[in-house]
Length: 222
Image (tube, rainbow, N blue to C red; front, top):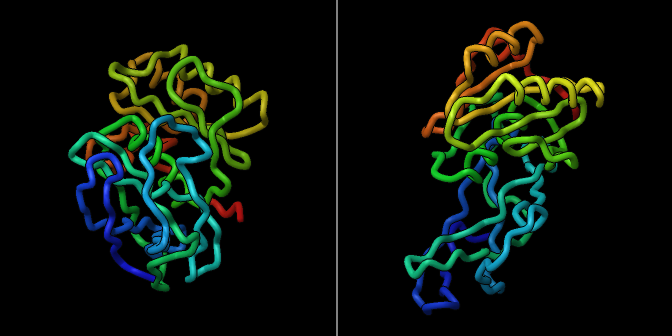
């Protein structure tokens, strides 16, 4: 399985060398999708949530997780989807490692980092929530509802309360991720309701901003 793959942009015919980035499995092992040397890259014209993720099994612990579909941005402006073989390209057994974040440049990066962090905590089968929240993007896993707000401006009291009410209706816990923080009222209500609040800085590692987030324990929903 190649560690790198020569890629020709179908839009401008420019040549690239692509290396699939590894992501940390819950067990701590770095995992990356194997690249298909016989496949052809395609230009992404329209995005669909299901097409943005692929299933890769960690060879260290055997868990099958969803990882971002390999992509490459060409200087010509085209975004290329790189064909994956569907297996892990990198592995390595080891103890639970520190969370490894992606640098956040786009809203999609923020959502990806939230997914990776929840996966690092032990939540499985993370997917987009069926019910769209009033703001941001909803994620759901077994027993958990998460909301990621990648917009500018602090999260409001109403947004925090809406998340809590939705989670209560689904008998689930909830957690909030924001790029720009929370209003004082939102933080006070989150503390009262026991909702973990995180801020996603440009470096990507979620920063807890209240005791519920600081004390959010790892889980095992395998």
